[in-house]
Amino acid sequence: MAVLVIVGLARSGKDTVADYLAEKYKYYKLTFSSMLSELLENKGIPATKQSMIELGDELRKEFGMDAIAKLLEKKILRDDKLVLVGPRSIEEIDYFRKKYPGLKVIRVNAVEQNRYTRRSRIDPNEKGDFLGRDEADLKTKGMQKVLDAAQYEITNDDNREKLYVQIDELVKKIGG
Image (tube, rainbow, N blue to C red; front, side, top):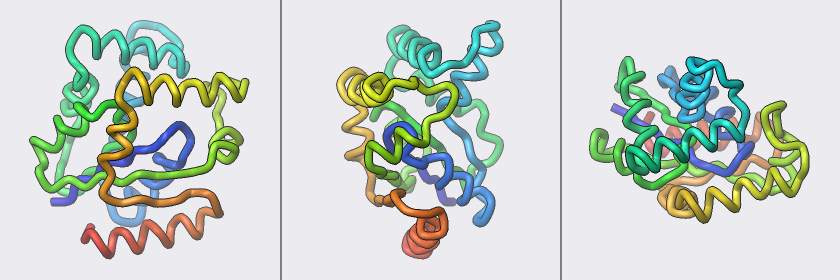
């Protein structure tokens, strides 16, 4: 059984890495942000970065720092090859580490300017607001502990082909 957790700051390429793992290596992909989006949509609230942050904060305050992990676990249909994307707290990683002791944490890095240019329609347009979200996550949710939990790192500052080569080399190393 191979369970991978992909971590990184906003727009570092976490989903790109996970999508490649899902497509080429047949991993089952689940994202923490999709759980929040789904909950917001069920309430009739648009899923913006801000609304997802607020909902995530509310859930963590009420149910603990691993609240999103507990909700996401209910979406797991198979765990033979699972990739989980985007935890924001170390408690979320620890929650899955208890269930899957052999899980591997992979950090995706990218420089600020590349991440900013990759922003989507749901991200803040202003660079200060975009990067400010990282700072808030690092301070309030313990995102630095999440990043530090990584046993492996991938750098996503070039083209996709070079990124895919790094992923392929990593999969050979960890056996996935």
